[in-house]
Image (cartoon, rainbow over the protein chains, first blue to last red):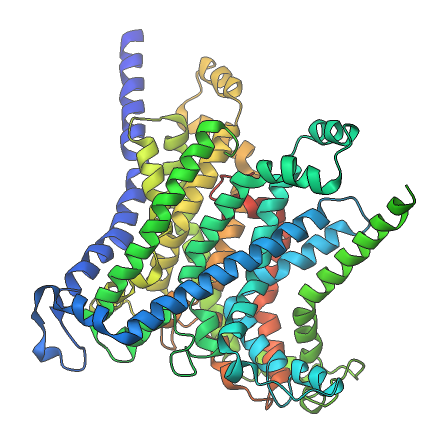
Length: 301
Length: 273
């Protein structure tokens, strides 16, 4: 009797190990990995949905086509400019805000709530709001401010399109950095800080030699995660500038979108998609390494 | 020491100012939604005005807004339920019944979340077209479930791991079956975490734009797609636009405020608590 119970129990354990995660894994394979393989397959075809009868296998020809297109180079450059400037700006602002919030003062909860709100708002709303109410050259708030101080009214989206895209994205993503770095600051050992203060360390020394090294893991994690998200932003660009003027603000996501759903070139869009996957993979490999290291040292997780 | 006396209030004041500046565009949007259209783009901008509810009436009831809101609600709730339904059992097994492959599975799940959407959009579009899933709620629920599943597995696993082992051990000695253990001991203990995970899934599904824009037309188009059609409002209907936009973000902002504490954990897949 006892032996049988044990047997059923271990059968049950075996079943749990084996079957419980399976539906989730199968679902993810079908929805994410299958399309990934199909993207690779499509990238080897000449296939435009406007001329479906001419669809045929053509090997690697799409890749040199994409690489020799001077626009593709601009698009990659735009993607990198947007990603790097947003990540750097949000990192600096995020650290400053996290330091400001990591103090005791009245109304801290409300201030924190106000600061995270831009991150909770859907990107299309943020972009519509900035485009119309703030950036509009005739009636926008920014133009009104400029006029009030006697400057000419700036046409932000026309004259500084890249800067505008970056500003709106920085506004959205600063709370992300702030939240993660604040969590880092709050896990800081207070005894250590007090000891350093007793030793006569000023705020700058304290920040440089105690706070910053402690934050390093959090900074790495936040930077890498944000990089992945910003690499493929789409909504803000679509609403603010539609990638323009010309292709001045077209990033890889928007470029692929146009190739696939405006020019209907499935083959070339897929080849560009493969480049996007490669770009993200470079970042992911780095991310996995950092995360593993963090786990090994028991700082995060 | 005299320096200290003004530094601290100064920093607090600075914090208030920065918070106000960051929040200002949202505040302005909310204010604009209560203005008349004439006041909305009056010059100089009106700070004091007579509030009206007309725009809210028109934006919500005299437009397609509610249809799109219903789409968003269906897709958001549906995908959150699917993601939780598939993710919780997986997280449970990965937390308590680890095998050699568990770590690999977890890492692989994270890697799917890191995949750029543009890397899979073309096949998804073609497959959806061929299966008749384009512009359907089912299609969007499938996509958002897959988007949120890794998050559910990682977060729920970390909550399961937080359950003290002694409690589980005690119940097992008492002869509780695994299903009873799950239902009456584990679930009540992780309920707050489950709630936060669900809220995070809803926030991500509610705000998503790229997949929605590429895979829906009108029938299943969520609010995020509807709002993007305001991209060329040119001052003609800012007040109505602001009312619609405020309504579109309201539920999710509230959800975010409620789940503030778990937001960081969710955003970093449980790496930072």
